[in-house]
Length: 517
Image 1 (cartoon, rainbow, N blue to C red):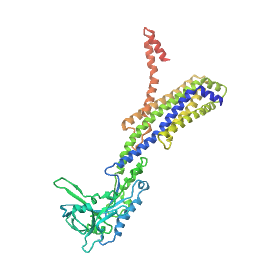
Image 2: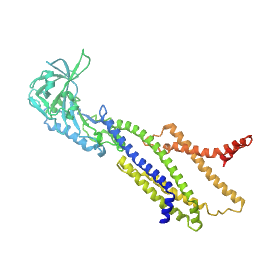
Image 3: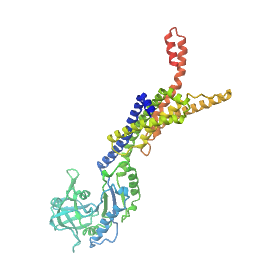
Image 4: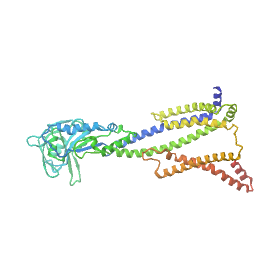
């Protein structure tokens, strides 16, 4: 133990450099993926939150032709709207249901022409039933809630105070309402109300119920208003507008804070599947449709995140390769400083396995200390789960390089057995040459192929994350360039040396001779 400590103290600086490089790279490769993941999650949530129009999941269904009964009780509305909304919410895939809020259900008429004393030029009217777990909470200012039709068969509805004043209608008044084909629909206003919470999201489906909406040029403006149906009055409205005058809409809002980038791929596939096969939700009625912008938004954000990830992977690959080279150089330097000691213990009969084991024990301590410091730094910068794949690459190189160089240096002192047969010596030399040329050619081919693929389609794959081979293209090109220089410089120096021999001054000759050595 004391001998190992003395060796470590004698070679303190290479060991410190190794520990420092391991600490810095472990901290970087551990923290950066978590930071990128957080930024990706933020990008997904921001895109969905700021989407206009919203990325809500919308299910629509027409009632269609059928035996509508204007005198049907409110249970028909409960079965046809409220229960269907609960059924949709319960039938969603678990991962999709986790990011969607409770549904808001509406049963709304088509646009109806309306004319009143306050709106003599006419306007457009929507009759709508709203439900979000329950009917919206209102306070009755005049009259009562709509109910089943009376002896006159008129559809009963209620108006907000603002809409009632704009139409100049009070509780007990009637409206002249006509469908697109000119059919008159008898309508009775049973009450005027004020919303308990105008900001409740149930009103966002039909904001014109609370406030009239005016659009168009100043010379021909059109006023759009909404009227509120109750569960008791909806069957009469459906019967009056049959067969296709009332459409059910179920809107499930997306919770941006429940989204993350990791699960966005599954959500895209599930939304696309629902849009392609809406019958899986078992919603009654003809022409059931499912629409949402969520899959489009997530796909667009995923492409941007994939590009960012790809750039980061290229940088991390370059840093990891550079750090690996530094660790290899440090291990080589350490072995060179200990050449005499390693060859001495080898000459005394110590096996290469024991020599490598001693070096491995020392490197394990150094790398463990550096990795621990790096993980602490990474946790301080970005708390979270350790990014083991990148960390293990650094730790593996740092731990295995010193034993390998120590064993190689110790082995170089062994007496080599050379075959006496010239043919066998030539054959052994050819085998070594073929191996070396094969490895170098493989590196060049891989560098050229990775660069060509990178220039052709970029570093982002179809699935989003970077291809490591393409991400390492800059490193491969650098390695190939270094190899070409390694093989190309000696012949060039030889040519320059031949030219220097013909020089009349000694300077060029000495310089080229020194360069060749």
